[in-house]
Amino acid sequence: MKKYEEILEQLNVDQFTVWKPQIGDSLVGEIIAWTNFTHHAYGLQDAMLVETPTGRVSVALNQYLKTGLRNGKARIGSLIAIRFLGVCESKYGTKYNELKLIITNEETNNV
Image (tube, rainbow, N blue to C red; front, side):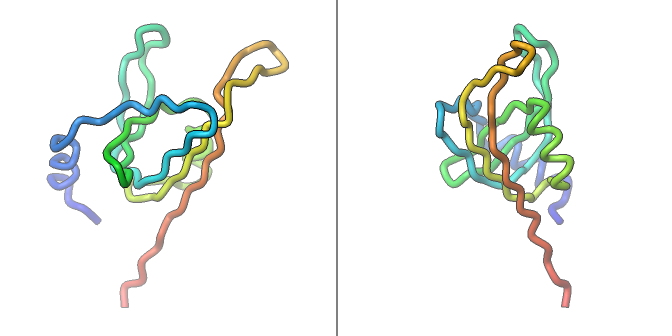
């Protein structure tokens, strides 16, 4: 497990880009932190910071992602894959981003 100081150092090294996917785009990487931000229209929003092969990305968490991450027991160090499937409309007329989420929690054996 990484030390607290090492995690803080990771957050301070690089700027994060915000994930703004187009239909069919995927994001794959390792969760390195949980955070939040204030959105101009929606107020305080939860987010996760992900280390990808091409850089660090901030992902806003909608209810689907929050539930999936919680049910998948995602934590710092979990590997995740997210695919943006498009904007859909619920039976109540509410628009939402349809996503697919995969979580891998690699367990290490202490021998």
